[in-house]
Image 1 (cartoon, rainbow, N blue to C red):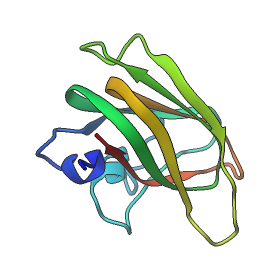
Image 2 (tube, rainbow, N blue to C red):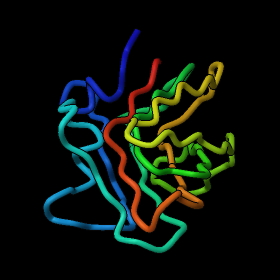
Image 3 (tube, rainbow, N blue to C red):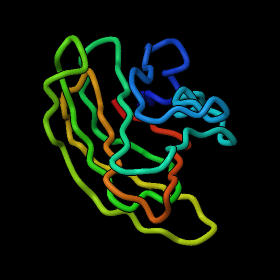
Length: 137
């Protein structure tokens, strides 16, 4: 099992290549840093998105997302060299329980991807947070 979130720090080369919100205290790089205390936060308004890029096309079997206050999420994939030509992979409404993080395991049996785009369509509040994303390759 390879987890892009664990490997994103260096060895697999997973990196956040785009985020629509930028807060210097909570940058998008926190999504892959492996620290459960850090997170990326949106700066209001929806949709919000971020793209995680891998070094090469990989088969993804499962994505694990730890977040807060996301109501509706869409995941898109691309096998292009650059993060373009995305295809919708799935869309899901997430449950919110006050005071708890959202822990979502999304099964994507053998989907090929070089880039993963996470589009946060709506939130339970004006701001949402993403603590980590990992992928089982």
